[in-house]
View 1 (cartoon, one colour):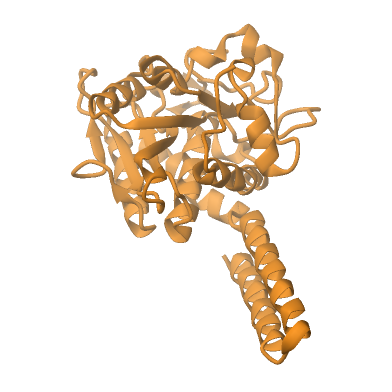
View 2: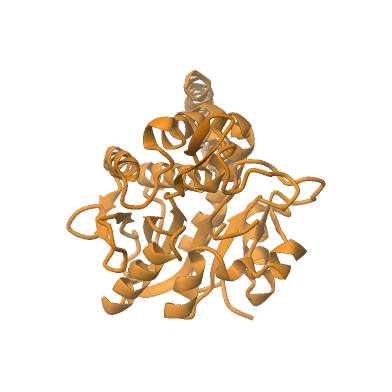
Length: 343
């Protein structure tokens, strides 16, 4: 955070598809009351299949494939305005296009006007499916920049930024892949990857102000930062910054059907709410804008160091984050009324 210390999938989906075909064949032979029972069973099975699809959507392999590129030496630490972050921006843009996520502006690029070198946010758009609710927007975001080249440590000078924040970027991309395929969001979603977070939250400030100028109705902003390794000795998978400011944790846990999100005292002590890309959206729109994270101050010692490398990431953990967050984002996007509120 800012300045602070595919084979398995195919087999699973094939198995689910086979189950679905078997159920359908059985039900079509039933008539009368038995047919009604069959219909209910079919609906229940379809619901179960959908839930299982969510649970198994992201895998360690899909996460690793993203991370291998985003945290590679070839990107030279993704410093804002560098050739490395330009390669990352191209990768993200191509990923959105391949997964049916459209550009919100004329292109996927949103060039910053508050930074001294050419650099851009990358913004994808999924229009909501409901005629009224689609007028409300959810921003799902993460910063994809890092600090680039730094002083040598054991001959290494590249601050790859695997945890900070290729991890959050990968989660957002997987969420975009899911919703781009499902088209299950009644509210509109912007998937925003920010540049120049490390320079003072400049990318998110730029985009928040630009969207405000377009008079969009923002419902909430959900940000992902440093989710590459699990927390230690906690009874929840994630925490949110600004926990006490809104009911986002409670809403998240309701849709997750478990204690997914909790409170981290250190996050409040160090005021992490103001240290990531949620904060400009809070300032500009005054709507619940918070960051999900698993960095707990004990589980990662390579913040802003060359040691923030791919080999330290827990891809199974990251896949779990994606799969458990999917019903949360889906629930928030589809609720008939606005449920996430500031206290």
